[in-house]
Image: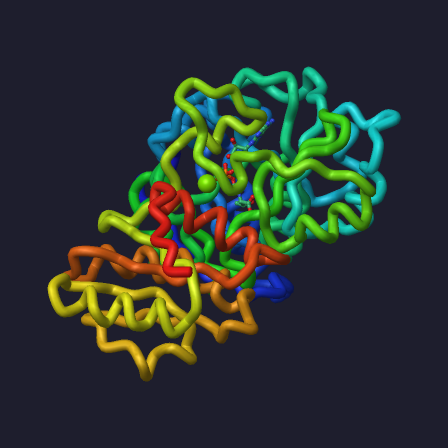
Length: 353
Ligand code: TXA
Ligand code: MG
């Protein structure tokens, strides 16, 4: 930290009033001086610092308690900056992906030596993204530097999607927290690497696997998207090796028909203090101690938007176990929900089919 205490600044989603700009100038000044600033994006809140300042980047790892070999995404405000930090010449598919940006999409390319190794976790590749959130892009533009930003949670916890969750993890560890309201998407960006042929999906998100296949022709899906890793297995994305998105209570995932899932949790609740994460339409049939709902079975975007805040909520409940309903399939955003839930539950799936 470079300031004596954490400043919390409320900024409107459009980031377009004189007052908003004043606050963002203050925050960008903190970034320029090597400080830490939490800011909203359309996916989750990010813990930002100047990605070209190694000392500032080190303080990100410290504030999160994150291993230093887990690389950071650099956030840009303008497509013209991509080639300053990444090797772009002749990269298959890059133009198709940049046409989508700003977007909840992170692309991995070979890094230029303008990017410090502290930022890339020692790798010779770098992940970049241009966020769609106006506050984020304005902050990057005013800072005049790419902002390195992992999700603004303590390492291993679910990512924060609202400012209350940010304050819980980051108060008095960062100089500035920008309160930009709830994040629209609620789960982190899709990550694809163009350093492999064909390209590989490393982390699913709102930009779907189907969309990437449509744009690029062939895309492989890393097996770490849905499976656990074998001990010592080498993977393309170091972050996948770590425990993730986990609340304090043990989480179990339920697969099968709605009726079977409901009967299962109601039965369990007779002998355990049970919290259930399910769809709104299931609420009336469930008699568990705590029932946490998001969206309908036909609207998994709403499930995604609430998922992390519901997982965090279970830490405050007096329950022994958390059961979460898995979406029926893994299409579109449901693949991302599957991927995050699998890690939150350490791959504990109860198959009721
Ligand atoms: O939506 C998001 O992407 C959010 C917001 C703040 O932008 N950020 C985010 O960052 O989720 P983080 O650090 O929590 O997750 C980034 C993941 C990590 O698992 C990391 O290992 C991986 O991206 N990653 C970063 N650079 C990489 C690289 N060069 N090669 C492979 N994986 C990389
Ligand atoms: Mg993260």
